[in-house]
Structure formats: C-alpha cells, structure tokens
Image (tube, rainbow, N blue to C red; front, side, top):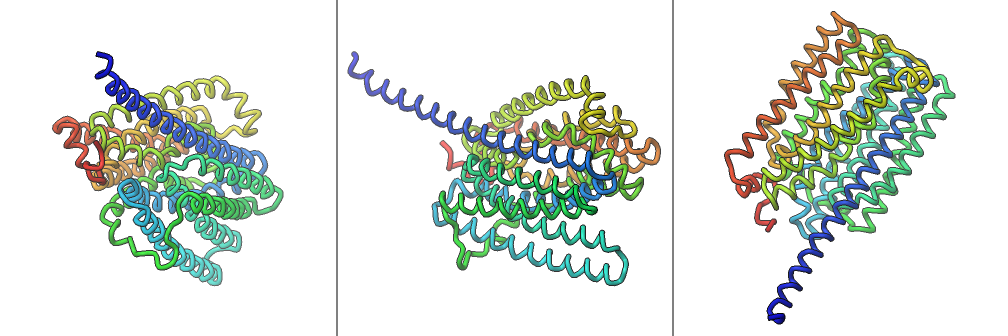
Length: 452
C-alpha cells in the first residue's frame, strides 16, 4: 500500500513546495515594493520638511505648485503605460516583451520631447512679452526639464515592476532619494529655493535613470534600434485610463491651483504642510500601485473577480489599520510636531489635520478597491465616475473656500473622494455578484486561458 502512495505524496510535496515558493517570491517582491515606497515617502517628507523650515511660505508654495505639475505628467504616463504592460508582459515571449518595452519607450520619448520643446518656446515667448517675470519663467522651465527626466525614470520603474524586479527598483530609489534630499538641502541656501529644488529633482531622476537602465539591461534587454510602433495597439486600452488619471488629478492634486487662485500661495503652503504629515500612509497606498495592478491582473486570471475583490478588501483593511494607528500617534503629538518639527502653525491647523486624516482613510480604501475595475479593463466606467467626482469636488472646494477659507478646499476634496469610493464599490459589486468567478476572469485584459 505504500507503493501507490509514494508518487501521490511526491506530487503533493512538489505542489506544496511550488505554492510555498510562489508565496515567498510574492512576499519578497511585495516587501521590496513597500520598502521602496517607504523610502520615497521618507525622502519626500524630508524634502517638504527642509523647505518648510528653511525657506519662505512663498518658495515652499511655489515648489508645491511645480511638483504638482510634474506629478500630473507622471500620472498620465503611468496610467497610459501600466495597463498594457500588466496585461501583455505575462503572455509574451522574450522578443515580444523586448518589442513592447522598446516601442513604448521610444514613443514616450518622442511625445515628451515634443511637449517639452513646445512648453519651452511658450515660456520664452511669455517672458519676452513680459507676461511673466524671470522667476516664474525659470520655475516653469525647470519644471519642464525635471518632468522630462522624471518621466523617463518612472517608465523604467514600471517596466521593472512588470518584470517583478522590485529589488532593482529599491536599489535605484535609494540613489534617487538620497540625491533629491541633498539637492533640496543645498537649494535652501539660495534665494530661489523652489527653482533650484525642482532642478535638483530632475538631476536626481537622471542619475536614478542610468541605474535603472543598467538593471533592466542585465535582466532582459529591450529593442532599441527600430523599435516597433505600439501606440495604436495599446491606445484602446490606455486612453480611458489616461483620461481618468487626468480627471482624478484635477481634484486630488489640481485643487492646489484653485487654492492659489482663490486665496493665495501661502494658503497652498498651509495645506501642503499639514498634508506632509500624512504623506507616509498616503504614499504607501498610492506607491504600491505599480506592483498591485500586475498582481491584480494575475489574480483575476487565476482565481476570478470574487476572490480578487476579497484580497483587495483585506489589503484595504490592513492599510486602514495602519492609517488609524499612525494618525492616532500624530494627533496626540500634534503640538510638539508643529512647534518642533515644522516650526510653523498654519491657521486652522487642527481642522486641516483632521480633514487630511479623513481623506487618507478614504483614499487608501479607494486605491485598493479600484484595482478590480482596472484589472477588468473597466477604464471607461472609472473615468466617468472620476469625472463626476471631480466636478463635485472642485465645485464644493470653491464654495467651501469662499465660506470657510483654506479648510473649505479639503472639505470639497473629501466630498469628491467619498463619491468616488462609493461609485467604485457599487460598480465592483455589480461586476462580481451576477457572474461566476470564472467568467469574471474573462474580463481581464489578458486572456483567461493563461491561467489554470
């Protein structure tokens, strides 16, 4: 009787070892992604803290406006490139992956060069006509150059995450974070801290990009000479996600321009200073997005929509607990934080802090649950939902600022984020409940036959 059980036991052990190995790989990859984002969060926190303590509100507010524009173009690129990379990389051979990565990189470079050159010409024309002063022209020019460098770096990070090479990303992020913090510290010794800080951001991105290119070449080279055109192939999948990212930025980040126009740049500094204190948990959620979309697509193919939703709920619950714990400590220590760490006490500081805490709770849940619709390729639904939330948020923010001042801007954002989250929950449940898990997997951008 022991004879027949031998092969069966061997197969069972092999299967158990395979499952354990996959879990170890996932845990290592996820921990590297979290460490990478923790490092970037710490670096961004240090940059903000240095500028708050060692520069004027005007310079800090100008830096926030400039970095917000950079964040917009990064969000657009990530939204355009991440879905096709997540959907196609797992089912292409080596040459197919090389063509996809090389063709997409070549196209992105061409587009960004055109926009950077066009933006530079417009800035020079406005300065020559004396419609903007020299400081504004220098700030916009530095932002254009830095955005070009940051876009290259972010694309390479996306590719390495798609290759499940989170450890390579972590190593290059160490270089980027260190260079950025050192550069911003030097910028505060100048009279144009915002311009120099943005310039240093671009230089740090360039140095990190060289390291990312080297890491990617070691793992799997891409097609560089005569890379095939891929924009037409991926546009149907990427267009709606890109539009959604632009609309979401309009109220999640673009509100700072509404604040600057309605109130002043000092109000931007007040909002940014209190937001800075919640940055670690916020960026922890948004930062693992480069890893979560490929994982969500894989889970959808292998296990279906119902199990994917359960896993995303567990992820969101864990992040909510982390956010609550962090905010509890921050709230108890807020007097010391504002007096000693920030050395500034913005108007309505406690109310701003509470509003940012509520926003972070909503956003960490929204970020995670949104991956179900993204993995299913439901970008049109998400875009229309985000558009409705953005219109409501910006309208509420404007009315709120007229009535309550700077805190009104965050009240409007909270309204918009809650509407967005409720919509995601409703549409996600509609995609899961009526259909078996297997049919849910067919909605993934990648074919269900890839899984077993």
